[in-house]
Amino acid sequence: MVSQRLLDKLNEQMNYEFYSSQVYLAMAAYCSSESYDGFANFFIVQSEEEKFHAMKIFHFINRLGRRAVVSGMDNPQNDYSSLLETFEHAFSHEQSVTKRIYELSDVAWTEREHATMNFLQWFINEQVEEESTFDSIIQKLRRIDNDSNAFYMLDAELSKRSFTPEVE
Ligand code: FEO
Image (cartoon, rainbow, N blue to C red):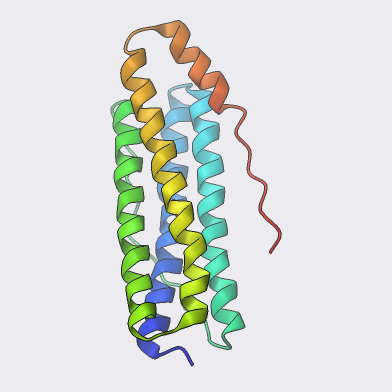
C-alpha cells in the first residue's frame, strides 16, 4: 500500500510534468514567433512528451487504486532573448526534473515501495536522455555562432523530430 506521503509526491511529479509540457509549449511559441520553425517543432514534440510523462504517472496512480489530483502551476516563462538562452533554460529545467525524480525515488526507497521504485526507473533512464539531448543542442548552438548555414542545418534536423508514444 502506497503511503499518503508517497502518493502526494507522485501527484506532485505528475503536475510538474504537466507544467513542463507548458514550459516547452511556451518555448515553441517563442521559436515560432522568430521563424525558427525546426526549433519550434522540437519544442512542440517535447511538450507532447512531457504530457505523456504526466499521463504515465496519472495511469500509475489509477492502477494503484488511488486518485490523481490535478493542480495548477505557475505560468511558464514566455519571453526569451535568444535560442541559446531558451535551450539553457530548458536544460536547467530538466536538471530540476531529475532532482525531483530522484527525491521521489528516495521516498519510494525509504518506504520499500518496490512497485513504485520499479515504475520510476523508466523516468530515471529518461532523464539521462533528456539532459543529454538539451546539452548536445546547447553545444551545437555555441559552435554554430554566426554560421547561418550550420544554423539552418540544425533547424532542418530538428524539424524532423516526431513523437510516437510507446505502447505500455
Ligand atoms: Fe518529463 Fe523532461 O521530464
